[in-house]
Image (cartoon, rainbow, N blue to C red; front, side, top):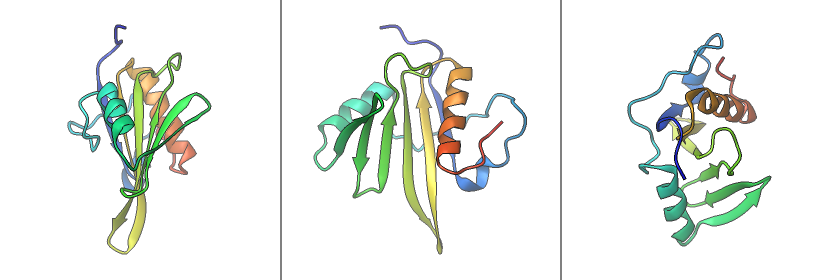
Length: 129
């Protein structure tokens, strides 16, 4: 299968997500907190690691790593942002607890931006515009 677009990496936190304005393309970060070079690499590794609970929800492949307090959500084939993975992790920031979100999306940029906005909204972040 041929991949469309280029690999995009977004790294968003509660502090930075609210700064986006308008319906402009989202900015990208040069380095993502997703440690895999591709969506397929993430799916293959997480699918073979012990301690990872795997499930399917509404067509999305989910990999939950309780030890790392991380949930990985993989877009299903047919989704506009496919192939893509969203990593959400509970992190301690001093006395505060936050949800950090990173996205690796290998689809067209507008579809990837929509994916980021959707997940941001689902997680209670002010969605980027």
